Image 1 (cartoon, rainbow, N blue to C red):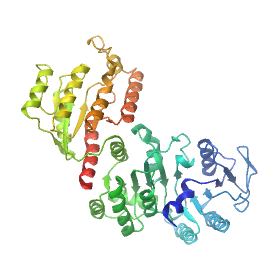
Image 2 (image 1 turned 135 degrees about the vertical axis):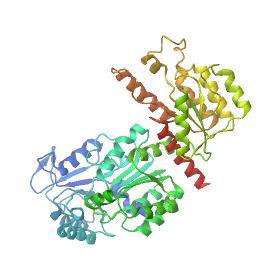
Image 3 (image 1 turned 90 degrees about the vertical axis):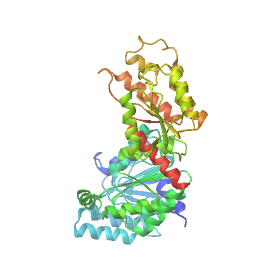
Image 4 (image 1 turned 60 degrees about the vertical axis):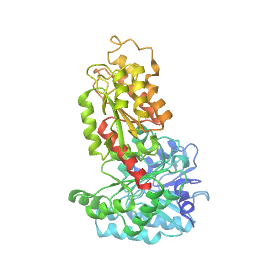
Length: 483
């Protein structure tokens, strides 16, 4: 059976049963059922419990054996000692997909927990596949599934696949994705990986045509050689980013108590990233930044950057950040500098790269002309705009409407989109956060509106120039590696 068919019931089930609901809505089984019911948009759901007969207006099935035949995914939320028997019953019923949210297995470090997980591993195989234990489960908007805290996650499927040994990391990733302008095809919290593991999930996302970018959080790999082989194929086909936890002594100790994983040495994982082409990141924000760059920017190989900024010191900081990211500041020729000098203010500005237009509030016509000169210069492969207020409303909110005479030019914000579409270059806007008056609720609303507008139109947005250039460097490095 191919991997897509094998995993289908985890992501696109016909009907789902939740084993372990109770009158206590704070219990994990009840929370899982409620999240699915709120999110599921008509997905058939069946609560299972031997202790109650009704839950949230639905009749409760007393056992797995009593479930309707259309159930092809079972989510188990029971005490660890009761889990193996429930999986055995699923297997006997011919249910091929089981997610075990329960904890109390290998991760607690006891002989009893290890024995229970070994029993789960023996039950799993070709007849029934198991995700977990000790996990948050599956978020699949196209399949009307969500993890326990995810009732409010977007219901429109995207193109980014994610898998993680951490439920909390999965929750953070799925919740923050919309702020970065992308949505998820599927996300899987797989916990202790007694059966379905990172090799299976990497194989799945490699084969899944809906997924164009893949991200992961790992604490350890059960089969390092197999994982190496599949990630090398995956990274050659799709941008693949991995946040590897447990590379420090204290992190490795935490990983062992979290999912019972052996984290591996820093040097071994450094070699892994170098040889597979997967992109290593070190924090969830860095992971999200990189994904946003791949989602919003066109493919790029040119490492030369052009920066337009509103202040000399800002330009120096951008130059330093460019160097640290492994990129280069493009060198303008005399003709380009002459063109820029003719439209820049005579004092306080600079026609060199980074281009300093003297203040964060240049007139739209001048801003457009500068960016067109940069884009047509042949000296750069991308453009970063830093410390320039790109919205008329924001300039008004910050109190500059009395000092300028062009507040009737709302097309200001459209300029980066125009440059990106006309010249095909990656364009990144640094939209700094904070600095407005204390009553700046309107400023934050305008900042969010502008960020969403840019993300929807192929312009990447970051809160600092350092994060912008670091994310851009990932895209350039990937483009160069692919050739």
